[in-house]
Length: 167
Image (cartoon, rainbow, N blue to C red; front, side, top):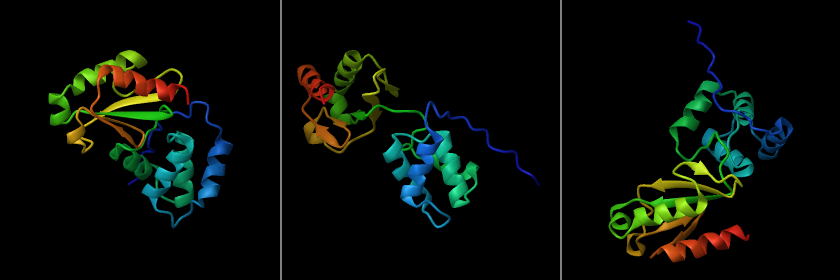
């Protein structure tokens, strides 16, 4: 039985295919490569996983493109659309919720002019919520990249975001 090819639903949005191939070369992607590790490394380098990267990974690892897309779509850590330089993760766990987490999210959203799952036009920030970041004692809390910020107030959120905008 012959299978239909998987439709390529992501775009490359201005990504240079030569840059993608150079990244794959640097990472030594080949048939013995671990798919998830390679996808993590490619995303780390490019900031996201454009279609050209997924096709290149598929070709070099000899893993069907449908399986590569299956892995990418299964794990929330992978992005097939460009994300901002900094990822903000607002905790929506019980402790954060009770101590004003929704208000914190609203302040961030208002300051940046974006909602859940969106990136600022300048590509500086991507905003999302997560079930828990494991810092209940700091509630309400958020992560920006790997940096945790807790005991947040609207003024503190504003100051923190300003510090990233000047970097």
